[in-house]
Length: 245
Length: 245
Image (cartoon, rainbow over the protein chains, first blue to last red):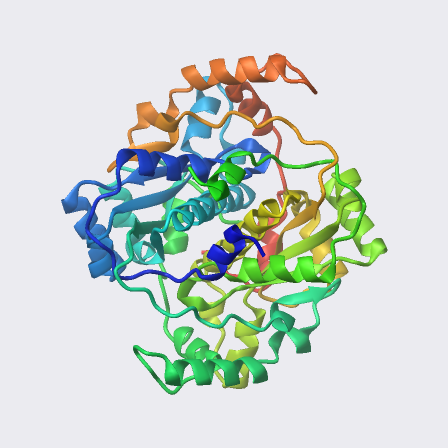
């Protein structure tokens, strides 16, 4: 196992950063690394916004309900799934936008943006920086779109806080390989048998150094999916011009 | 710039592989690297299937219309966005599945699966292997789901072909930084001005060693979005139990 993979295996989401701003050079290296990944038919359907305005950043932090580490880190980026660029190209050529607006195009844009984000993450971590994905900005996508002046055919997918870690959590035990890796067809029993993982996670959650609790993966999932989360996502996507069917 | 980032910046999609199968150890290293990435609320909403059955692989290759390099490489994996595991946990606990079926949950699963995939890719490339994402399996998701015996609340998102490269394409020039990186708000003029990139891509496409053509990024996008692509994606997602609103 080489040093790239060793660093990846040490990944944790960092929630306590130094306030020292990243340099312009570091930011540009991270964005170029983000761009280096694959893109479906090379459409490159994403835009990154470097949030340097503290009023905007503070409101994004409040929306995300992760105030501390969204407000204080080396930088905060927004990752926007973006087909507006393509829409303007089509409009200039006098072509209809129907094929921009489809479920397939939306999936392409979400996948492209996430490929870029995870490349950004690996590059940051290879430089000794830490990151946390901030999906919490989807708590109020409409307001985020207003704040960032987003045009149609764009989706604020997640934020990313990045900087020097002050403290790091322990690496969490992942699902056992047998639960996430199958051969040829989906074996329902194999993929859903949580017996082993619930034991592993019970031991992990009860003994971890911070926030120790008596729970398991299964219990956490029951709790997590109990409440309605972000019921306005579909309406927001429609407002942005996508046809969800 | 360190060696991890250097390798990332050399990324190209590989479309010509050695047929030598990856070892079990290599495959497991790649899957563990895939699992090392972030996951929204640690739901880990993905499953990988290692397609070793040549009849299944050949049909997936035909569906994807990338027959050569899906059939012949070191391995072919399917990446499945997967909330079925969570659905069975909720069902065992006697809880309703409403919050599994939302647009938000579908986005979480697509993002989680893509984070895992791009981690898999970076690990593979750090080992000297090459990859190609195979979004073409979405040409017929219904048939792919039958072939792989996929349960509800799962989506075959893309395939991944991986192995030793026999030939490699040139690295393609990405969008200029100014078009994909903004500050604070979305500057429509800045993000959509393709003047510079169309010049760059015209030079690239006309002079590249294979498939030289007289075109630009803008022309390619007009051509790409001219045809309806994968109009059944929305219906398939509904069939799998998602409520797209």
